[in-house]
Image 1: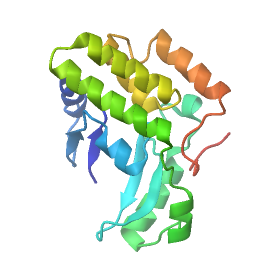
Image 2: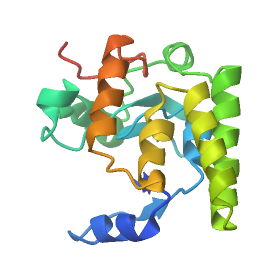
Image 3: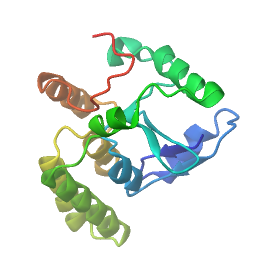
Image 4: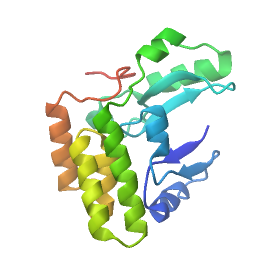
Length: 189
């Protein structure tokens, strides 16, 4: 198991990742490359990859515990039990066809949004805040329901990722039908 934080603030990740003794590595993905490769649109999420490098379970919400269950409507034990069965017994809950049919492939706007976000991060690293902000806002315009983009940008704009703008975004996302992962493992809504 490897944890990957989709975060532009490495110091914040380090602070979180060192609060408890972890038994797995935590990597930082400032440019959201894993989101692009595996279709992450929200976190926490997981993708299961076997020893041969094949995806055996596509991106899906994967809560670590039930701390946010009232908000997320996700029972974490269901995902945990499926994962344990796969790891300990080799039993997959999805065949290859189900994996493919539940993968979220990006549309053109999402691809462009990810590119704009990556350009924005690069420009910010080079000191061009105006260019950075333009590209980050364009990314949000192109993918307004992608949590990894919208919520991921909030700290870059000095906004609390659990503040007012976050809750406005959550309301918009809920009104849009909670778009995201088709599997919806453990959802009780």
